[in-house]
Image (cartoon, rainbow over all chains, first blue to last red; front, side):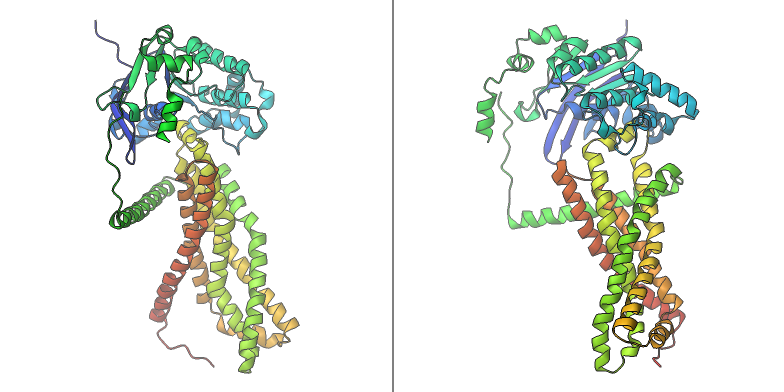
Length: 267
Length: 279
C-alpha cells in the first residue's frame, strides 16, 4: 500500500531574515482531513510556518508543496487561484477597518465570484450564523465589535469561500476562557461539518486538548545544536502531556523552570 | 543543549560605510521593484469604482481647503516681500507679474505637492502601515486580492489625476490673495497689477506647472505606499513610515522640481529659440 500524499508539506525549509535564521531544515507533513496543532515558544516560527505554507511568504530554501506539487513551480496566477482553497484566521482577526462586517465577510466572494448580491447576502448570513453571530451586526464596523466577535467575523470571512484547508493563527489569544472554548468548539465543528484539513497555531493547552489530531512542537533555532531538528515533538496531544523530553513537558505544563535564569543570563 | 557558537560581528568604519551603501542600494532597488509592480497593476486594468472613488474623495476633495488657504497666504506673503524690493526700484506696479509668475511656474505646484505630501502622503503611509502590522495586507492576499491593485493603484491614480486640479486651485487663490492684498492694502493700481500679470504669464508657464505637478503626485503616492507596505512593527514603525514619507517626498519634490525646471526650460528654448525680451 502506498503512503497517502500529504495535503500540505514542508521539506527542508529554511527561512532567514537578514542574518537571523528562524526556520532551519523544517519538514512537516499535513494529511487530508487531519487537524494539526503547532506549538512552541514565541518567536520559534509557528506563524511564519503558516505563512510559508499559505504562500504569503517564500522560503529562503527548501520546498513547500500543495497536494504533492512544489508551490514554486506553480505559475503565480494559478497559485493565487489555488490559494483560495485556503482559509486563514489571523492572530488579530485582520478585519478591514474601513469595511463593514458584511463587506468583510463578502470580500472574498466579491473578489473571486460572480454571485448575485442576493446570493452573496445569503452566504454571508449563513456563515455568520455558523459562527454564532446574527446578521444584525452586518452594518457594524470592526471597531464596534468585541474581541470574540472580531475573531468570529474573521472566521466567517475565512469560511465564506468554503476552503479545503483552514489555518488558525492563535485563534484564542486575548479571549476570556468562555470565548476561548467557543472558538475551540467552532474549530471542531468546522472540521466535523466539512472535509477540511486544519493547522492551528496556539499557546493554549485547552485548544491543544480539544482540537488536535496531532501535535508538532517547534523549538527556536537559536537554542538548538547545529544538526538538531527544529521539530522536537510529533505525536498526539495525550503523548505530548506524557513526553519524556523535558522541553516538551515544560512547555505543555507551563512551567518556567530554568527559563527565567536563562533569560536573565542572556540579558 | 548548547547554542551554536557564532563569531562576534566585525564593526569598523569601513564595515559601517559598507552597510550604509548596501542599505541605500537595497532601498533604491526595493523602491524600483515596487514602482514596477505598480506599473504592472496599472496595466492590468482600471480599479473598481467603489475603491477608486473613496480614494479620490480622501485625496482630492478633502485636500481642497488646506490648498486654498495655503495658496492664499503664499500669494499675500509674496506681495509683502516683493513690494518692498520693487518699490526701491520704483517698479511696484509690476508686482503682479513677480507674484503670479512665481506662483504659476514654481510655488503653486510645489506647495500643492508639499501639502499633499503632508496631508495625504503621511495618511496613506500610516493607513497602509497599520494594515501591514495588523496583517490586513496578508488578509487581502489570502482572500485572492492583489494588494498592489487594491490599495496602491487607486491611491496612485487619485494623486496623479487630482494634483493638477489642486495646483490650479492653489494658483488661483494665490493670485487672488496676492492681488487683493496688493491692490487693497499696498495700494497698487489694480489695472497695472492684472495687466502685468497676464502680460508675463504664458500658457506654457501654466501648463509646465501642471506638468510638474503630475510627477509630484506620482512621487508622493509611490513613496507613501512603499513606506506603508514596508513599515516596521508597532506604533513606532507606523509613525516612522509617516515621517519618512514626508521627508523623502519633500526632498524628491524639490529635486524633481529642479530637474523638470531644467528640462522644461531647455524644451522651451528648443521650441521658441528667440531670446525673451522685457518691454
